[in-house]
Length: 99
Image (tube, rainbow, N blue to C red; front, side, top):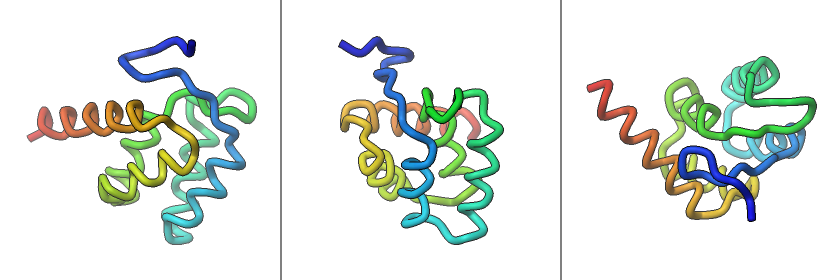
């Protein structure tokens, strides 16, 4: 059993794999933004990503990816559907708090 944090399983994802999948979803400029963000993120340890919530939020707010594309992307990198749905729910809730 994978432990949970904020209702989401803790899943590690290889940075190189994550970024290779991102190339299919982002323009070159947005990809470079994401790459810089990930490489400076506190959620990355060595070559592994431990928390995808902040990265998903970055994809929405800075890269302007739709919720549908974020969902597809997170599933393509190997997150379980229940975790993807929880991450998107948290992002929607955060967006509602802002407005």
